[in-house]
Image 1 (cartoon, rainbow, N blue to C red):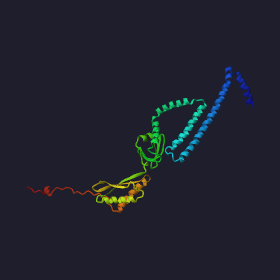
Image 2: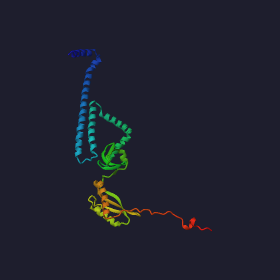
Image 3: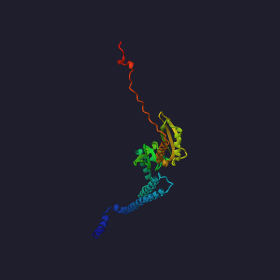
Image 4: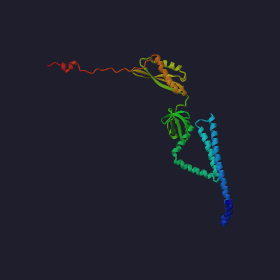
Length: 304
């Protein structure tokens, strides 16, 4: 109570002691302070509301694109991030407009700053450009098995800067997009079917036609081997001890890993059941040490 009485007495006294110019400008200053406080409060509310809306819309967009089958898995994270950041950008522009900042001047300033930053971060932006090209050209997608930069694995995520790959032994590998885009990309998941290739050696005395027919009959009974194109057995080389045959069989891409081992074991078993002999290495003949003829031996020479 005493404080309020003191303030009510001190404020009129302080106002009366002010110069005339300050006293005349005091109402305008009061209005400016009140307007500034109101604008600041509105800007804070806009910022909080924009941040909450961005989070809510981001979650909604994630649920929508996660359920749809018309958007590729590679593009889904980018769509969600684009929606979220677009709302945040609109929020920032609205906050700056609340303080009277001209958005056109701000955009020009951001453009000049972006150019300067782009020149300073050429390497980083090259990864961004490469990431965009990978998303446009799509040499691989998420969950594809690829080989890039001597790394074999399954693609987990294609980001704007780096691509994440998980190898068969569970190793996480992150590769810059510029490195991937500039190198050779081998995608083993793109085609529906793949061909199994391996060689078989049999003894040179075996009947090649009989061996080929035996292998082809066994491959014809294997359900995972495709009938079109048909399996093929070709003679690769004729050696002095063995005949090398190349077995080629097409399977579904999803069955390639398990079918490869199964087909190899199948061929081995049918050849064993048909008593087809494997090449047996021939030991080098033993050579006796050289001895001079008896007539040339010094002990056998007759004295003159």
